[in-house]
Image (cartoon, rainbow, N blue to C red):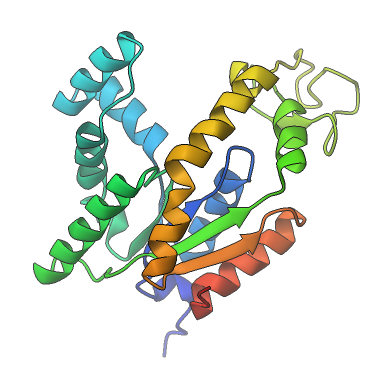
Length: 235
């Protein structure tokens, strides 16, 4: 008889959210590998639709070229299309979506319709919030350096390269992303507080919110996230 593993289970929708620098991308990759489900990133979806020239992608590119934010209507349309893919059949982890309460309300309605239509077995999402102290966020973001050649990420405070400013793998000069400048970081954190943080109250009121201490070492954060997902401990 075949041994059943966590990768054989229907997981459903997992939402992972937290401020910039909280480690969402890192943890999403680990959770996705653990359960054998895709990491669904709105950034990846947007780039894919723009690259393929889909109708929502063309409209989104026009909006971005004007320096404006892509509307919820366009973002949700692209997310809905992505979630129809076969690899999402037993579940997925959402990274960067929903960003607002309006998007969360749309997602609840979308998942409820899938269950009603018997097209997916997802139901209500599992929601995990990463909590990180403000000064720790600043160190993570301002200290981040990346290799423009291989994409490897370093941090001058926590994970510095062997030689300052140079990639260990290929010797390229490391760069600081525009988004990691202090003035830009302040605006990103302000936008998170105004737009995304209210998701905590939204999901807490529905008994779905699980909070993880994101200040811990990455392995400990992973341990907590997996335990929350597995056991469904709510706050």
